[in-house]
Image (cartoon, rainbow, N blue to C red; front, side):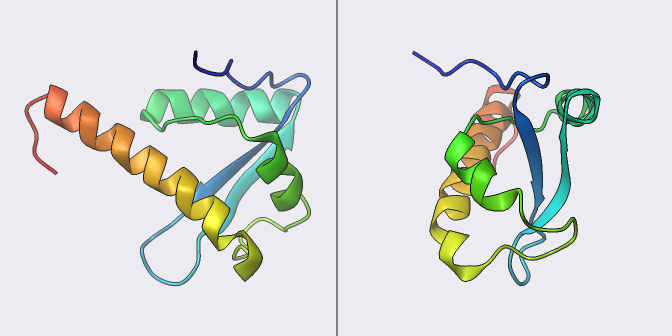
Length: 98
């Protein structure tokens, strides 16, 4: 059973950005109305959203624009692999090859 989506009123939301160069960075972070806006922008852009409270707690101390520390590479790589897999499945469903 899939986990419920983040609750922006209760949960902190962290958006990650990865260009393929260097380490991923924190692109946005927020709680409440800011979290709701981050989630809305992600949904509009078709960006997958994953609930991972432990990873959010580890990332929430980082400033926006900061690269993630090495000790979080494995956890963030798992999230990115999940997102890329979803994107690939969606592309195949629309007839695009990845």
